[in-house]
Image (tube, rainbow, N blue to C red; front, side, top):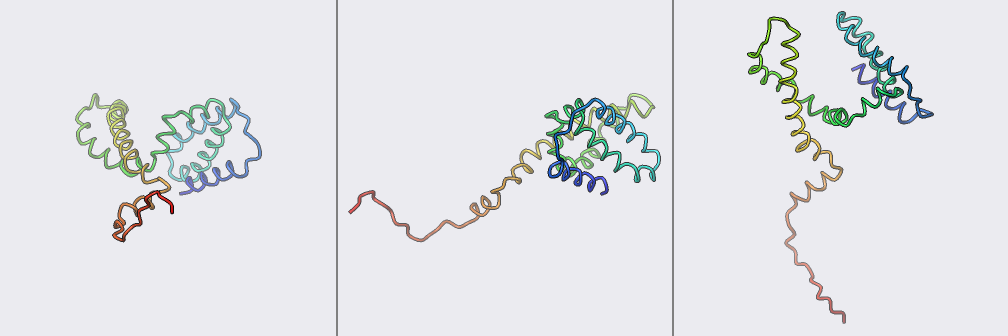
Amino acid sequence: MPCFLLGMLLADIYVARWKSQPIASRLNDGVALLCVVAMFGMRESVAVDRLLMPWVLCLLMVSVLCGDLSKRVASLPALCAIGGMCYSIYLFHYELIVVISAVTLRFAVTEKFLPNFVLQSLLITPIVLGFCTVYYLYVEKPCMARDLPQRLLAKFRKPSTSPVAIETGAKQ
C-alpha cells in the first residue's frame, strides 16, 4: 500500500505540479539501475524491505522520468502494453501459474534452483501473458469504453410499440 500511495503522489506531482520538462541525463539512468539492484538486495530483510522499498521505488520512478535511456526503455510499446494490462495480469497470474506449473514442474533440468526457475519462467510467462492479453482485449478493454452504460441500456430496452408517424416527404 505505501508503494501504491507514493506512486499516486508522484503521478500527481508529475502531471499537475512539475514546473519544467525534466532534463534527461545518464546520471538518472545510473540512479535507476542502482535502485533496481537495491530492490533485489533488500529482499533479505523484511524490516528493511518494508521501510526502504517504497522510497527506493519512488526514487526509481523519478529517475526513470528524468533519465535518458531508462525513460526510453520504460516507454517501449511492449512494456506499456503490459502496464495497461496490469489488472488483468493481477487477476489471473497466480491461478494460471498454479495450473501451468502442475504440468511444467516435471521438466526439471537439474537439482539447482536457478536453472529450474529460469526454465519455469520461460515456460510459464508466455502462457500467462497470452491468456491475460486475450482477456484484456476481449473483456477488460471493451468494458473501459466511456459509453458502455448507454450501450448496455440500449441493448436491454424494449422496442417501442407506440405508433410512429411516417413522413412522406411531400409538403402541403
